[in-house]
Amino acid sequence: MEEMRCGILDDLTMLIFTFQPLPARPSSQFRFFTMVGTNGNGNATYFILIGLPGLEEAQFWLAFPLCSLYIIAVLGNLTIIYIVRTEHSLHEPMYIFLCMLSGLDILISTSSMPKMMAIFWFNSTTIQFDACLLQMFAIHSLSGMESTVLLAMAFDRYVAICHPLRHSSVLTLPRVVKIGMAAVVRGAALMAPLPVFIKRLPFCHSNILSHSYCLHQDVMKLACADIHVNVIYGLIVIISAIGLDSLLISFSYLLILKTVLGLTREAQAKAFGTCASHVCAVFIFYVPFIGLSMVHRFDKRQDSLLPVIMANTYLLIPPVLNPIVYGVKTKEIRQRILRLLHVTTHTSDP
Image 1 (spheres, rainbow, N blue to C red):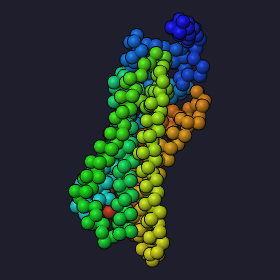
Image 2: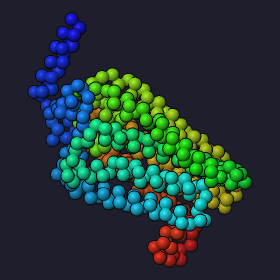
Image 3: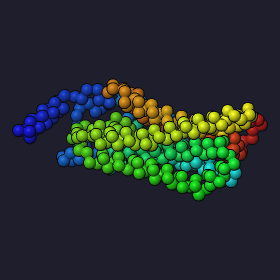
Image 4: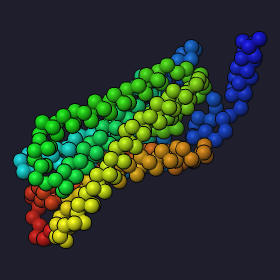
C-alpha cells in the first residue's frame, strides 16, 4: 500500500511538472521543468548555470567589466607577490601572510570567473556534475583558507603591537610557513565532506542552479532526498570556520585597542596605521560573505536579481580591492610599486 501511494504521488508530480511551467524560475530561458540532468537512476550528470536573469541580452556586454575586474585582480595580486618576493625588507610575517592572501585571491577568482565568462559570452551554461563538485570544493575550501590567513594576520598585528619585543621570536619564518600549511589543511579538511555529501544525493527534479558557479547551499536544494546532514554540516562549518575566525579577529583587535589607548598619540597613529590595511581586508572579505548568506536566508523572491548579482561580484570584491588597499595604505609596498613603474613622487607621507 505504501509503495502504491508513493507511485501515485510520483505520477502526479510528474504530470504537474510536465505540463505546467515552474513559477518564477530564475531565467526566462529555463521556464519548464527538466530532468535531462539525470541518468535515469536519480544520479545527476550535469547542472545548468545561469547568467543574469532578465538581462540575457545585456549580459554579453556586462561580461566585459567583469572580465576587466578579473584581470585587475590577477595582475594586482601578482604584483603584490612579486614585490614581497623581490624586496628583502618585506620578508616579514605580515607581508608573507599578505602573499598567501594574494595567492588565495587569485585562485578564488580563477575558480569561477572563466566559466562565468563562458556563460556570458558563449552561453555555455552546462557544467558536468564532477566539475561542479570540484568547483564547489575549490570555492569553499579557498574561502576557508583565506579566513584562516586573515586570522593569522590579526594574530601577527596583536603580537607586533601588544608584545613587540617577542614578535621576532614568536612569529619566526618556520612558524609562519607552518601557519600557512595549517590554513591549507584546515580549509581543505573542513570542506572535503561537502562534495561527498552532495555525491550521495539523488537529483530527480530540476538541475538548474541559481548562480553562475556551484555552491553547496545551491546544489543541495535541488536534491529530492533528505538534506538535513548537508544543512547541519554546513552550519558546523560556518560556525567553526567563519564564525570562530571572525570572533577571534574581533577579540584580537579589542586587545590591540586596549593596548593602543595607553600609548602616546604618535604611537597610536603608527599602530592604527599598521592595522588599517588588515581591518579593511577583513571587512572586504566578511561583509560580502555575510551579505550573500543573509540574502540566501531571507530573500524568498524567486525572481530576485539581488542574490545573483551579489554572487557574481562576491568572489571578485576581495581579490580586486585587497591589492588596492595594501598598495595605498602600506608605505613600503606603495613606494616599491612606484619604483617598479618608474614613477617618482614628492608627496610626503602622513
